[in-house]
Length: 480
Ligand SMILES: [Zn+2]
Image (tube, rainbow, N blue to C red; front, top):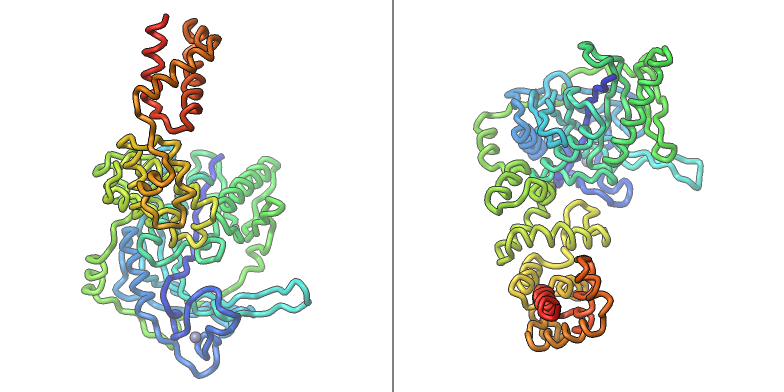
């Protein structure tokens, strides 16, 4: 069997104000404080389209190779729910602003082009808050009218892994464009999936099921794995797949039926009479095209080309713009690119993860500045300290503006490269460890590491490790 997956992403836009009124679109304010008659759906008010939202939609369209429609239409999607005060949601339906693009996704099997059906603008709904302590449900309208882009892929994805890679790539593009922060936990980047299965080689699609309620990349992949297995098993058992919406339950690790097609809403879409068709001037599109930033794929290729990074390193460093900026700032400050890449990917990103500094998905405060790290790396490459000593300095540099060189001087950590002192330590260790010396002579090369360790210990970890190796080999060759 083969699975067929299409994804629908809702991305909250980083505009200051909402899509049809001047209220703040910010996250985290006390409930019902960012509201006005427009986003509360009072009668007699008129929506006014936020130009910035259109600009962001065009940017996203241009970045993904979409055609931008010269004229598009806002419609009313009618349904009753407490979080939707007007009784309808304003959304683009028949004529979306962007259509027909694609995203190139790097997978283990190579680069895969995933088609985009459309990108359209719509307003977000309010949020129902279910109080755990009283029986009431409350509604917070701060989110009502926050601008969203809905980005719909073609059913081009074949595995949960590809779906995950597509989402990461799309999020990365939106972050580079600075139109969405991509935070799945806070709900500013949400994903629903359509999935069906069919015998391999069959042209027509199987009956599709929509999955909702996945709030992390991991959840999307887990839900798809579960749902594909469920559908395959059902077909093997001779059952018919029902077209329906299912909710992912992350605690029980299963999807559960929410509503079937038979009870699906008829949204009775019709053009919103309060909003004129949206006309986009070609000159404006051209101007936005001129000011497009470098995108992740371009930056990945450039880092490989300009800094000689491997494809893997370039990919890790460019998934997030702030990380790529950090890396390049360090290189500009004098660190060799390969070393800057290694230290950033291992030590710095580990600190960022451990201290949860990337919760907002933009690292605003780095534990150690890129210039500071570049200076520390230079101390290693010029032989002033060894790598282990340098690593040990990271906690002391953390959150300070300290010059690493100054710290090394103050703590007396400069590497022992004094030949006579190291030779004495080597002679001493050889004398103290006759068993290990005998083992090395018998061909057990691995034991060499033990002797190096003994010399390092004798010098308080400050010895130049390469020099210790060389001196040990020379001494062993001499005395054999
Ligand atoms: Zn408002």
